[in-house]
Image 1: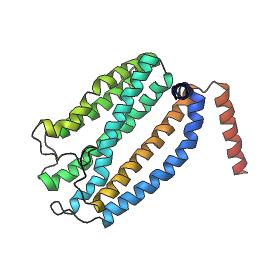
Image 2: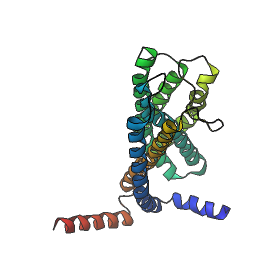
Image 3: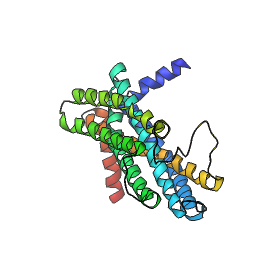
Image 4: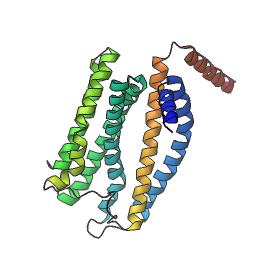
Length: 258
C-alpha cells in the first residue's frame, strides 16, 4: 500500500503524467458535476418546499452553502499544496496552489454576495460585522494576498515560497470561520451540515443541497485541472512532449477544418 502511494506521489510530480491523467479525469468530473448540479439546483429552487420561517428566501442556500464550503476547502488544499512544495520540493504542488487562488477567491466572493442577498430579508441589512462574515471576508483577503504575491514577484521560486507561507499561516482562519458561531454570539445561523449530528433539514431540502455541494466540488476539480494544464503547457512549452502535443492538436484542428 505504502509503495503504491509513494509511486503515485512521484507520478503526480511529473507535469506530463499530471497533464495526461487530468485530461481523462476532467471528462468524468464534468459529466458527473453537471448532472449533480443541475439536479440539485432545479430540485432545490423549483420543487423543495418553502421554509416555514424564511419562506422562499432560504433557497439561496443551494448556492451559498456550496460556495462557502468549497471556498474554505480550496484554501485548505492550497495550504497543503504549499506545505508539500516547501517540505518535499514538489514543483507541481506550487502550480496547483497558484491556480487555486483565483478560483477560491471567486467562490469566497460568491459566498459573501449570496450571504448578503440572504441577509437583507432575514436580518434587514446587507452586511453586519458578524464573526462568520468578517472571517469569510478575511479569507477573501488572504486569497487576494496570494494572487498579489504571484503578480508582484517575478522570480517563480521566491513567489512560490512566499505564497506557500501565506497560505499555510492563513489556514488558521479556517477553524475560526467554522467555529465562529459557537465561540461568539453571532447573527449567523449554526452550520447547516455537520458530520457528528443528524441534519435538521427535511430530506426534500437536504438531499438537493448535498447534490449541489457534490456538483460544486466536481466542477472545482475541473477548473483546477484545466488551469493547471494551462500552466503546465506554458512552463513546459520548450519540452519535446509539449511540442508534440501541440503539433498533434494543430493537425487535428486543421484536419477538422478541411
